[in-house]
Length: 262
Image 1: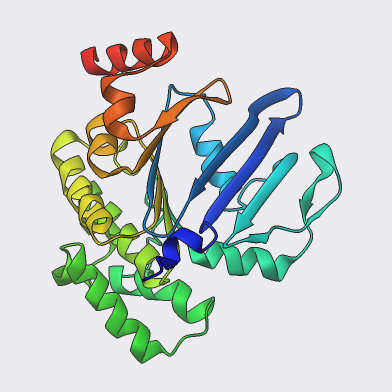
Image 2: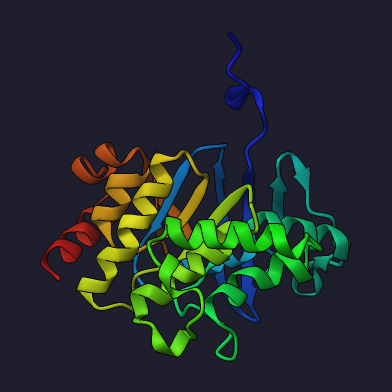
């Protein structure tokens, strides 16, 4: 039987991506891809370009050169260099709604209940039926372990519960891939494990994910591929068992050694 995941284009593919902030070049020609069911983790020191890469993939930041493709469809651009920006607003909206992003700082609406937070985008952005969205939202809140918190407000939750609500909100968009930008770095170690547990469960389900993380154990446990970024370039990449156990470059060896002893 033919394996359709092998012949289908990647859910997200980035080719030779460059990103600058005026004279500061943050990404210097990066290539990554994630096929359906892949978990790709981005690791590296602060300032290496990990979060910028994720924001460029989701079109929250404009890149200056290179290609971004969603399921084989290339983003259309207008302008060049620092003046380059997406040419098709509807294409951007469609891609963003299929690449749900979970941020470091939760970004929940303080004046809405947790259930309302999870329902907001599917109803207002996608125009889905409110009753169906509510059923889905309750299901996803149960899935992340806070089904009993539907009617409370974000300020009444712990950081770990807020981040799990943010994950439920991302899932309720029914995206083709999930993008995680340091989802545990704002949490205390005990609360961090609540979120790690959810991310591991999503990986086991075969969800397509790109994960920026400082947690090497999480990256080792859930990833199909790990990408080590250093000063805006991919220094090394490969399956986690090889990358963590047999790093080839001195820079990765130093990074892992510092991470273990930190």
